[in-house]
Length: 152
Image 1 (spheres, rainbow, N blue to C red):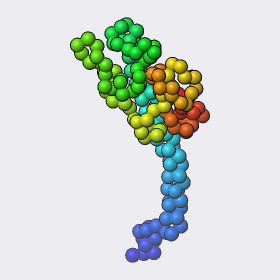
Image 2: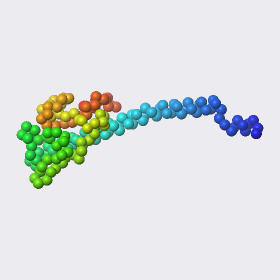
Image 3: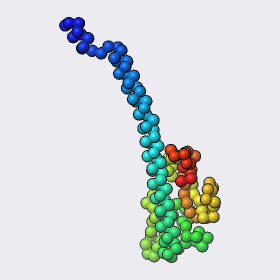
């Protein structure tokens, strides 16, 4: 082999270092983007879970207002807890359920949600226990847009 053919057969150390450096820079640029994508997906899951629970509370309230289900007099037509939405309530000869299961909070990775009753303040973090008017995540985190998750 001639000297020229030997050089073309492999990479020099400098070429290898340059190629590795380029890969490191590209990888370091992709990691923050991947983290933001994961966080955005969790935020989307949180919004869906909150919407699902709130819609079930609204359906329960609607059924109570129409007199389809029996309610406690002090509840103002809202469910006493989230389990009632899953377990269901008697409606005539049938049992009606408003949720299949309580969704998991993607921010805390648990099934424990913060609850508010009609009697509680709009930004209250403690539940009075009378009924369930609203739900929120107990995560102290902040969303990508700068808002606190618990304010959603």
